[in-house]
Length: 208
Image 1 (cartoon, rainbow, N blue to C red):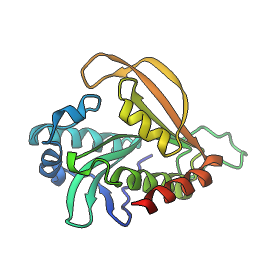
Image 2 (tube, rainbow, N blue to C red):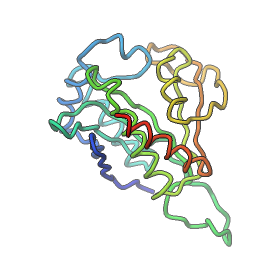
Image 3 (cartoon, one colour):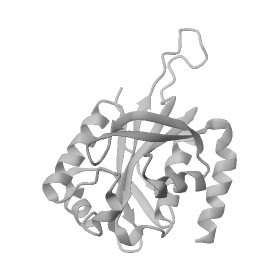
Image 4 (cartoon, helix red, strand yellow):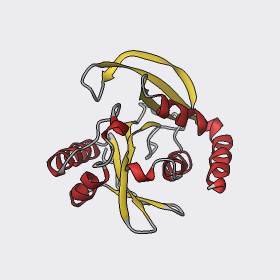
């Protein structure tokens, strides 16, 4: 089952379907301080950005991901990327009320990164808000989860700040950005928690 591209628009950022024409802008966005990207696989240069986008689009075609370019509305500059991925469609049995539902049952939000001048500007909070709202209110998923490298204390703090619930540590879970088996901190938000999380995010955005 394919996952159709969508566009999400907030007050300060727009999340538009990631396409190959974004390659040069993504490369420019990631060209700042390399120390910001120790723990995340970030495209460096045009060729790397093209490969990054092609991989994301292949996952989209397989129905397991939905990638975005994040655009700052004030100057129409691409400032980063994020995606829904590990999109799950559960095998509800025939006769069950959920059998044949057209939308995903669960997903992960990840591959999120921002240009150095967009960190701590509220762009990440608004992007997460837009994606979570779509997942819980349009797709009506039961769970959204997040994984971050155990060494990435900044990402862990950001997920706790927006209301992610810590579930535990997955050992040697994935290949890290520095090509070693990494331990991952797992966070999640479930459907029953979304109203409280939504209010929390709206308050954070209002302070901006």
